Amino acid sequence: MSLSPGDPESMGGYALVDRLGSGGMGVVYLGRSDSGRQVAVKVVHPPYAQDQEFRTRFRQEVAAARRVSGAFTAPVVDADPDGAQPWMATLYVPGRTLSDVVAQDGPLRGRALRVLALGLVEALRDIHRAGVVHRDLKPSNVLMAEDGPRVIDFGISHAVDNEALTMTGRLIGTPPFMSPEQFTAPREVTGASDVFSLGSLLVYAATGNRPFDGSSPYLTGYQVMYEAPDLDGVVEPLRSVARRCLDKDPAARPELGELRDMLRALPDSDVVAEPVTPVADPVEPAGRDAGAVNRGGSGRRRRRVLVGLAAVLAVTGLSIVAVRGGSAVLNAASPSPTAPPVGAGASPTRSPASPSASASRATVTPPPKHVPWDYQIGGAYAPAAGVRVVSRSHESAPVPGLYTICNINAFQAQEGAEAEWDSDLLLRDADGKVVYDKDWNEAILDIRTDAKRRRIAAVLNTWIDGCAAKGYQAVEPDNYDTFTRYPDRLTGDQAEALMKLLAAHAHADGLAIAQKNTVELVSDRAAVGLDFAVVEECAEYDECGAFAEAFDDNVLVVEYTAKGMAQACSGWGGTLSVVRRDQLVVPKGTSGYVHQTC
Image (cartoon, rainbow, N blue to C red; front, side):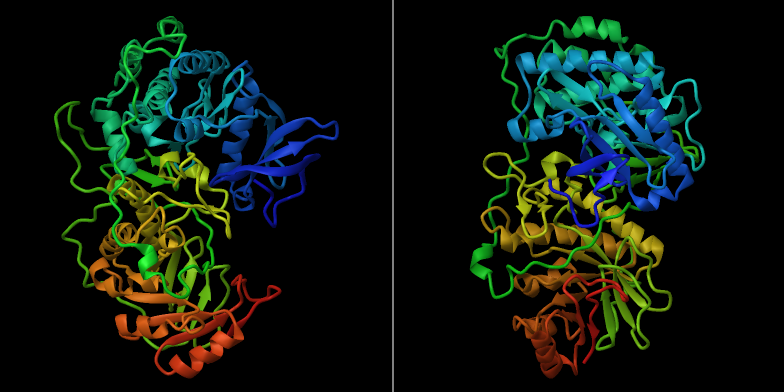
C-alpha cells in the first residue's frame, strides 16, 4: 500500500517507502536503512504522543519486544519511545497475516497446520522465557513467513515481574482470542492465558471459524467466560489439544512442553481422515437489483471521515470498547456481579446490536428545517455566525449550543484500517481478494448475511454510543450507497437491513439518524427508521425533489460546484438547508477552503 498524503518520508534515519498497515494507535511502514536493510517501522499517531499513559504503554511494548528473541518472533532493530513521535523498528518479515491467509486461501491443513502450531508453541516459549506474557495472540498478530510463523505486536504485553498499567484500570485485548482470566482478573494473567489464546487461534486456523463468536464484544466475552467452545470441524488429534487449551481453569491447561509433545502428533501431510470444512454464513439471495434502480448520481463518490476510537459499553460490571473490528479495551476497575456457573444456560438480555425494546423514541429530535448549516466532516472549526446545524466527524466534539450531527464511515473501512476489522467481514471477490473502493482506497464491508451485518453493527453501534456520550443530537452513517457501486455483489435490501440495526440503536441512544445520499432507497426511509437526509450534490444531479418529498423538506444539502450551488439556491434555497463546501471539506483557514450559503 503506497504512502498517503501527510505520511512522514523518514523516521529515525529509515526511509519510509510503503504503508504495511494502520491501527487505532499508529501506522506501520516499510522502512529501509541506508544500507538497504528492510524494517517494519511502527509510528505512533501524533495525538497519542501527547498521552502520557499511552507513552508508558508504548515504552512497555518496546521493552517487552526487546526482551524477546527467537526464531518465531520479529526482533526489535531500533526504537525511540521517548521521541516527539514515538516509533519502533522491527525486522521486516515478508508474508501475509494468518487472518489474511485463512480468509483468502481457506483453513490450513496437514503440514501447514502442524508447522503453524509447533512454531507458535516455540514462539510462546521464547516469549515466556523472557518473562513476558503476550496477551493479544490472534490471527492478525501472526505473520506467515516461508520458514514458519512469526508472532508480532507486543503492544499490550507486560513483564510478569512488573505490575500492569493501572492509570485508568483499562487493559486491552481481542475478545474472541482472550482468556477468561483476562476478563475477570486482567492484572493477574500468566502464560496460561496465552495458551488459551493459542487454542482459539488454532481452531480458527483449522476451520476458518472462531470457537467463541458472539454478535458483540460483550457476548463474545460472555461465551469465553461461561460457555463451551464451538469445535465443529476440528478433527483429532487437534480437537483434544484445543479442548485442553480452552479449559476455563488456567491450571488445567497444558504447559508448553506438554503442548509441544501433543502437537507433534498432528499429521505431516495434507491427507486427513476427515475433511476440514469451514462453516460459512450462507449468502442471502439477491433482493433489490441495484442496477434496476440505479439513477443519476448513484455512482458518485462521497466525502470521507476518519474513524476513531469507540465509546464505552457498560455491561454487567465490565466496560468494553470495541475498536472497529476486534480489539477491545476492558475496564476492570469495578467489580462484576456474580456470574452463573459454566453451562448454567443463563444469557444476557441485551446486546449492543439489539437495543432494548423499551427504549423511548420520543426523545429523538430531528434537526430544524431550512436553517443555515455547515458540513465539517473534513475537520472542525468555529461555525460562522447564524449557523444552527453542523455535521462533524465523530472524532471531533459537538458544537455547544448547536444541533450537531455525528458522521461515521458505516459501510466501508477507513483507508488503511481494514486490518482492524475481522477479515471475514471484508467483502471479497471470486479469487478471495478484498474488494476496494478504488477512488478512496477503502475496503468494502461484507453486509450480505444477517450474521455478518449484526457483527458489523455491534462495532458501529459502539461508535454511535460514543456520539451520544459526547452530546451529539444525531448520527450520519456514511456510504449507505456503496451497494450501487458494486451491484454484482451487494444489494439495496442488504444495505437497508444493516441501516435498520443502526437506526434502532441510534433511537435507543436518543439520537436522530440521517439517510446519507442514496436516492435509490428514499421510498423506504420510514420503514428503515431514518429521520432526515444529508445529501451531497442533489441539485447537481436533480435529486433534491425526491429527498424533499420523502423527508418533508428536512434535508441538509451540500454542493461542491458553483453550478450545483446556483441550482440548489434557485430551486431549493427557500425550503431546504443548503451550503457549498470545497471537495475535501477542509477546515477554515486551510488552502482551498470554500463555504457559501444561498
